[in-house]
Image 1 (cartoon, rainbow, N blue to C red):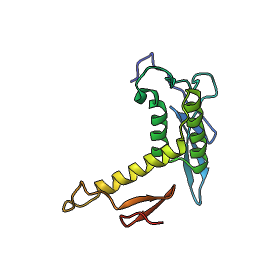
Image 2 (cartoon, rainbow, N blue to C red):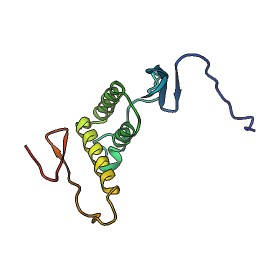
Image 3 (cartoon, rainbow, N blue to C red):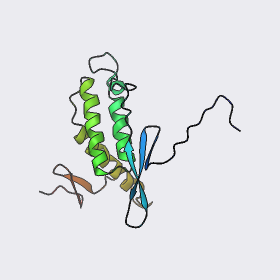
Length: 152
């Protein structure tokens, strides 16, 4: 039994509910309802997008932690393309408000590639050398090719 000081809220009706910083929405699929995720940003003034400003004397890793966390969350949530685009715009806004001129889209692609390469390296068989670089390479801005060498 929960302590008397705990309070619970029950939401009835509607097709969406907010849970922590996520908005879960039920949308019709082909034959069933499908859950769609979106990062929930409260319209109230509870979050002002202000983090550690770029001009502060904090270590650089501390200053970009908010942006790095948001990119990590973006890549690990099953977001729709529309929700993903909105989240990238929000991350850009946070970065600019804190004095950064970052290419967030490039950062997302770079981290996504790193995650992909990590998956390839962890699925290698035991007889392969784990220090051997993966034959997955980046070609152009956002295309991948398999073969171990850069092609034009």
